[in-house]
Image 1 (cartoon, rainbow, N blue to C red):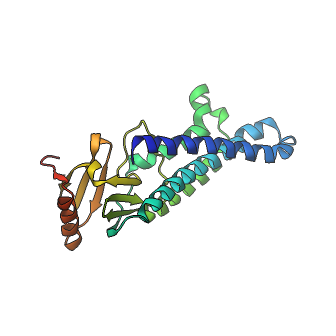
Image 2: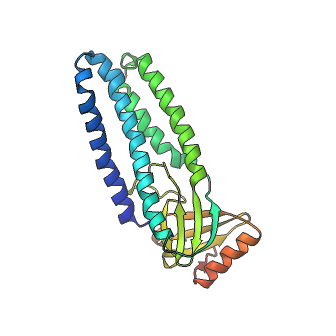
Length: 227
């Protein structure tokens, strides 16, 4: 996916998430008046921000999934394979944001008094929820070789920051002319996008491997001679 489209998905998701949190806050406002300020600060606010984080991940993933499906319907599919597993670094961003939601005050005050049992319980609960959601997200990822390009599709819940290090197998459409080169390894093939904006890792062997190499050759994608 191009940086422009990736940036669009990120900032649109960010703005919609702010509206989502604002809407929920307005709905809860009558109830919040009867709750003490410490309870709001230690429980309600982290809970709202955690829900906002999940909403952001789902909205960004769903937006890209819709864009990719629209392109997929217009293309002839040659081959579809299961996507590669998410790396720990790629999954870490959503956990970093979760840690900041619950423990940013600790980093500011350097005091354990700001950390309550309620905060810790909520953090553990959302940590577990995110862990299983990422596992489910991995299973939805597909790498599709079509007539005009490669489409990495699925409900991708990784936080994909436009200005950060490109993630592997980022959801999006990659025309063959935007694939700079490929590198065949023992049990996988790595496709490098132009300007080193990331790569697509396809774990494959046997007949499928031969098909992919043939498709790449037919579309004049060059073989890389170095790792």
